[in-house]
Amino acid sequence: MLVLENLEVRYGKIRALRGVSLTVPDHAVVAVLGPNGAGKSSMLKAISGTVRPFAGRILWNGTDISRMAPHKILRLGIAHVPEGRAMIAPLTVEENLQMGAYITPRSEIDDMQDRMLELFPPLKARLSTTAGSLSGGEQQMLAIARGLMSKPKLIAIDEPSMGLAPAVANDVLAALAAIVQTGTSVLLVEQNAALALRLAHDVVVIGHGEVQAAGTSEELGHDILAAYVE
Ligand SMILES: Nc1ncnc2c1ncn2[C@@H]1O[C@H](COP(=O)(O)OP(=O)(O)OP(=O)(O)O)[C@@H](O)[C@H]1O
Ligand SMILES: [Mg+2]
Image (cartoon, rainbow, N blue to C red; front, side, top):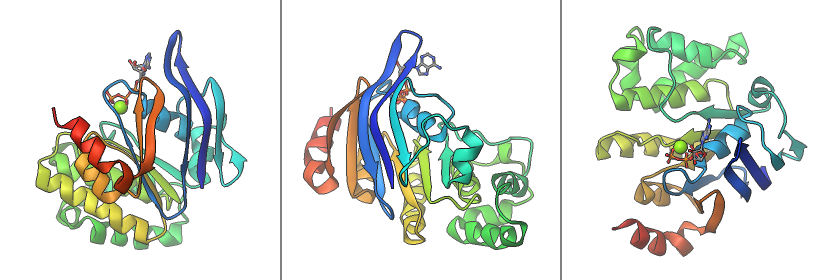
């Protein structure tokens, strides 16, 4: 279980997060929605250790990870798929997957790779293709698969549907539902509220660095969708 307690992130004078508290239970999908600049990516960066919180705590199964180095957090079972996918374009799909597995025991890597190709069938025929020449949807699949190669207990994914055609976004998000079945929790940052609400049990809306609303998709779905339709 991941717990954020009054998390604050600052960049100089900019207060990106101003005391955010939320919980991601085990075996759950929690969606984080909110407008541009709300602080969503800053939250994921603080969780994965790539940004150091100014105040507050991040507890992972009771351990305070708020000031831990990113590679230690990864070893504790939290993977981060950043906004923009951040794959190594000149390397092949297979090489990118292998990079994601650097903490995975060698005897388990082939098996994990097979599982990723089952989860994302379009990657099968693309193993020797360079990541840079994949379509947007394939790149997003690869980014998530690479994160999963470390066998995380929680994967935090930043805007996976960004720039994807609706049908492709649907496929990518459907794979996330399958991930949860295998026992990995998903913290999903999304701009596509309709997709996120379909997948997530719990939803947190943030704005101006603060939690504006939190509850189940059922409780909040109607109001959120109404607010998103301009
Ligand atoms: N490295 C940085 N240096 C300075 N300010 C930053 C930095 N990264 C983010 N910010 C600022 O912090 C605030 C929150 O940004 P963040 O990227 O976390 O929001 P977001 O909700 O992910 O937005 P988006 O939907 O555009 O991805 C914004 O005001 C942003 O300009
Ligand atoms: Mg962002």
